[in-house]
Every structure is written in structure tokens, then in C-alpha cells.
Amino acid sequence: MKWNLPAALPILGLWHAVEIRRFTEAESADGRFGLYLPETRTILIDSSTPEHLRYEIFCHELAEAINDMNDLNLKHHQMCAMGLGFHDVFRNQLTEEAE
Ligand SMILES: [Zn+2]
Image 1 (cartoon, protein in one colour):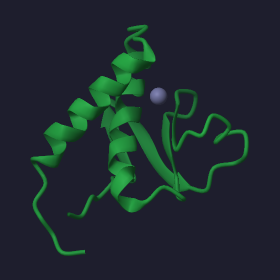
Image 2 (cartoon, protein in one colour):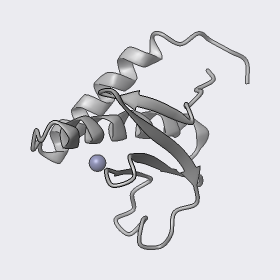
Image 3 (tube, rainbow, N blue to C red):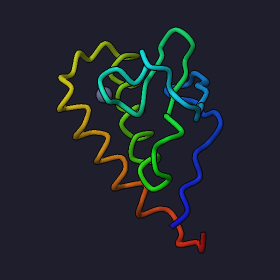
């Protein structure tokens, strides 16, 4: 299965960048592989993350973005559940592709 992450996408009508690069020590401090940066409207994914996990992280950061933009104040486990739910929905929309 090939997961194509967009370089940018609108979330709730506002364009966000999706950047895949090596995290700094501070960015990866809690052992995380994804970050949502509201100031720059960027979803960051650590390039050390195996390809097959990047889309799952991207889905989690989508949940983080929607939470932040709507001031939902969700608990982190709720955003995790939302991210996994998005991932499950999107996965079924993607076509199988040889890598
Ligand atoms: Zn999170």
C-alpha cells in the first residue's frame, strides 16, 4: 500500500503545510514523531519514522489541528482515538499500489 502525504492541504479552510524532516532534539523530546504547529500552520513528521507509520501520524496531527482550531480541549487519548478513526476511514479509500 502506498501512502501519499500531501505537501499542503486545507484544514477547516486554512492551508497547512506538511513537512517531513528530521526532528531536532527538542522536537523529539517526548519520543514523538509528529507535531502540529499552530503558529505556522504546519504538520511536521519526523523523517526517521518508517514510511508505513507516517500516514497514521499525519492522521493524529489532523486531530490535533482540528482540536486546536476549534478550541475543543480534547484530552490526548481522545485525539489519539480520532486520529486512528481518520486513519481507518482513509485507509479504506486508498487503492492498493505496488511500492
Ligand atoms: Zn498528540
